[in-house]
Image 1 (cartoon, rainbow, N blue to C red):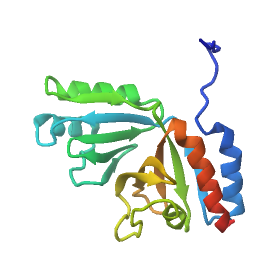
Image 2 (cartoon, helix red, strand yellow; image 1 turned 30 degrees about the vertical axis):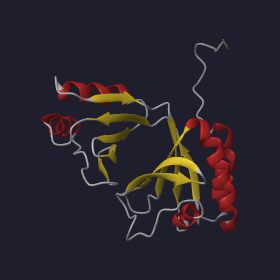
Image 3 (tube, rainbow, N blue to C red; image 1 turned 60 degrees about the horizontal axis):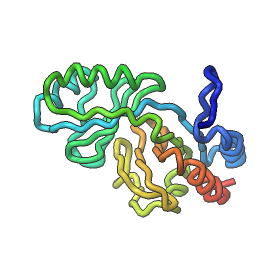
Image 4 (cartoon, one colour; image 1 turned 45 degrees about the horizontal axis):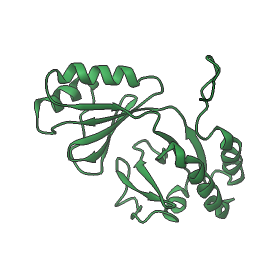
Length: 200
């Protein structure tokens, strides 16, 4: 078993390419911005969307769970992404995963729910800029036109042959979140950097 220093700082899955992401952003002159958003809290939630727990959890989080397929809802610093009829991914600021989990469990009470902290499973790439959609379209089979995949939309899909959760952010010019498994993050970052050469 490998030994680790007890107080060693956490390293994000893409810390080794942070300089390259920043360099590509500078070289594009603002056409593309690539950055990692490391350590976001991510909670996988499963419950009956029509049961009493759904409303109670929504009230506890001040965030109504989206019921329309492939949509996302943001309230405050938290976002709920629809993954299936009874499954959501809750995303919050780094370090809030325990708070989110305890609030969900307390609100659900004895109702059947599944609450799993998956924060360490994925990291998040931020892709913004006027050509963000064009860049993503190079490797994603979804129709990313704003009329189809506009702000507040999300989907489980593939990007550069890598499984991701893709979310179009609701804020103006906020771009996209690309949530990718940590083990594939380096590959996907390399793919994005290669595809971005068209804009630099």
